[in-house]
Amino acid sequence: MNTAMIRIRISAHESHYGGNLVDGAKMLQLFGDVATELLIRSDGDEGLFVAYDNVEFISAVYAGDYIEATGEITKVGNTSRKMTFSAYKVIRSRTDWGESAAEVLGEPQLVCRASGTCVVPKEKQRLKQEAQGGE
Image (cartoon, rainbow, N blue to C red; front, top):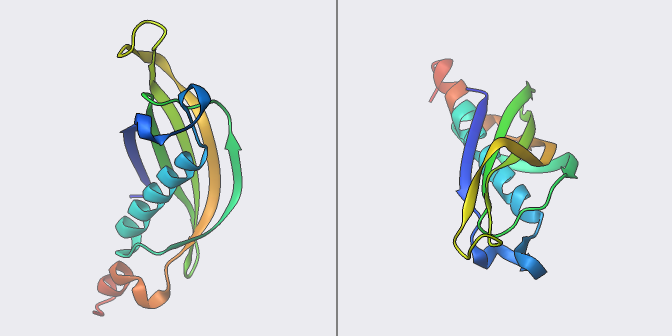
């Protein structure tokens, strides 16, 4: 499996700025969690996220929004794993309708995309070792 997805509701305690605006770093945290799952599925180890090549914040995220973050391994080296990520808003908070109102979006809204590199040291690549008959 070269893809993974996580969906979460952004809570009020995660809003960092006025108007319940959420810090963009929250999207990077989600991408890190997706990357961890991808590495566990491909190598049997969490590995390490070493660098983002590109990050684009496209649309605002607010407390109460539901975000779906996806990732894909696009290239596999000896120890490196290149990945791409996207985060979409799938439900948005509608406090203008009422304090607990929300709306399912007909079309998910892209809020962030990124690409980066993770590393799994050879000695930690458990699934590859098992496939080759090692421990």
